[in-house]
Length: 509
Image (cartoon, rainbow, N blue to C red):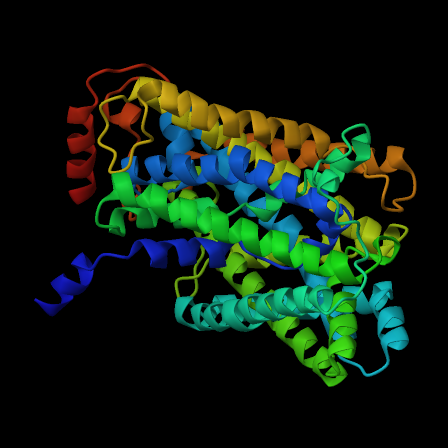
């Protein structure tokens, strides 16, 4: 009886909002936007309206309408079939793989700044071989922790979110605005006219496209929409609170850096640590710099541990559905995707070596960051298109949460997200002028080639798949609705309510 009460326990609106904020907020990208000064506020709010909110609402409808195993694979597969579904889940896994070297670069720079001599720390943070060594050591350690199972990495993730993000974020905002309130001269102009970006400078829009990645990940908590008391009313409130909170943290943190660090001295990898150091020196607590650097590095480790396990587990579910060879279906005694995680580690190692090849750490950081955005946005484009299509192909499918306004409401919300993602996708191929990247032609060529390679891989795997990849002993992957009806994905069907019950009956068997 007690366990039943626990299962029926509902999550509060505020708790759900906090879950979303912790899942999305990261401090490492703030220096990139600090270059824009007050105009960064416009970019943050714009990206929230055309991306953060649509992702949250669309993912909630998909998660509550199609809650069977598979996540993004299940959703896209219901609309467009397993080929594009496999592309979506593969891109989720590979974009995280590409993201690891960028976030770990930030962790390496944080560790470089634990010394007492700032000039020496800065020199160390620019050393490619130091960065490479730290990236690989932390990542392989994170993989080791991830392989230990859910209990092990969940503890690291829980404390890492508090110690590595929440506390440093509060310190950054409080000290940054205290510095300004004390009468110090701001490093950026504070005129109201500076709130509007200079749209005549195309390069501003290019680098600002990276804000979309700041807001990525909100779909991960969409499944919790079922746990609120009244999803139709309370979930939008939770999204409003989390969206405002997320934007506020990003805006205030970015401005705190911009107040103190001169625009010409802002570095994508070092800017945050330099800002902390300058703040602490001003406040007379310079000794705190190594402490905050360790906190940030721990936060990076915690984030990496969580993301090592999450997408790999999603790919494992799809693999066991017969879409990847048996090699990819191997698990250890803790139920973790052993081979998937090890292959991921090898790819991360290969990508990290590019730090030694490209002209500077910042150039490598930027190219991998933009590649991450490109791959993730392809997945989001599929997700938005899926939500619209399923409103017509499965209109009667029960959804605990449904975007209000009928099909028009869905077109507005998902359409806005699709257009915003498409624009950001196109801009992500253009090299930003603010960063020394060597040859722009080589920069763009690398992006295009890597994108084509990563998009082609799932199509090739899907084409050569074999019947024996499906283990007959594993029967926990529910069939798609169109498989039960013996139709083709994408066929419009106005009587799919009965199918919904058939699907659940099939799962029960």
